Length: 221
Image 1 (cartoon, rainbow, N blue to C red):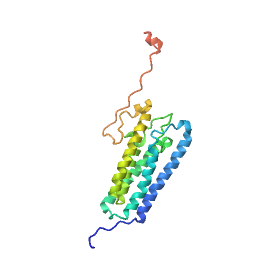
Image 2 (image 1 turned 90 degrees about the vertical axis):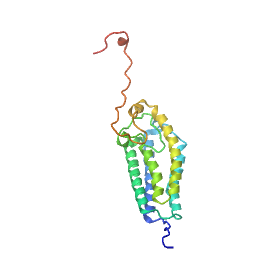
Image 3 (image 1 turned 45 degrees about the horizontal axis):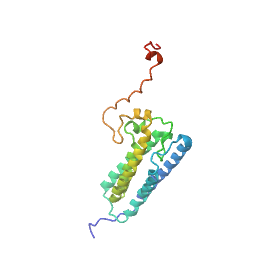
Image 4 (image 1 turned 30 degrees about the vertical axis):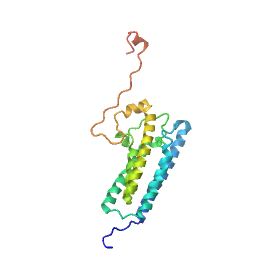
């Protein structure tokens, strides 16, 4: 019938896009394993939220398969919507790669906080504490939307948000136990960069007074 919406088909470009993103995830897993191997069992620390990792694996598998499967039964999304979703997806992928590169050998997929944690304030971590999770949330929204699976974009985003929230809470408990991290990120927002100059981190507490100072004697110098 004239004017009826065309049913979507999984084109070669769409399949290649999903395959490229899935390949990126596999490369990230290899990178994470190398980082954990370098740190060793003792230095890598305990996972911040161990129950969240298997759920994240399942959700990422759903992200790369469910929208493609549903695409066959949905009308082809409008070009403007696909273009907007592609822009968000490209920005999210760039932010994700930037975040991982900035953390270097400290990054891993299990949210293990190193025992000898040194706070990193370079890259996107100058502006917010969890840029990688911002990128993940954007990917869960943009990829299904690009493929015309608006319902899947909503439900996958809600499920991913619930899992990420539990993971972030566990991760921040471990990070917050480190005085250097608390000082470095005291004025840094979680997700949305704050406009305007950032206040300087609080200085470390002064050392305890010497015996001479407690006694009222002049100290060195």
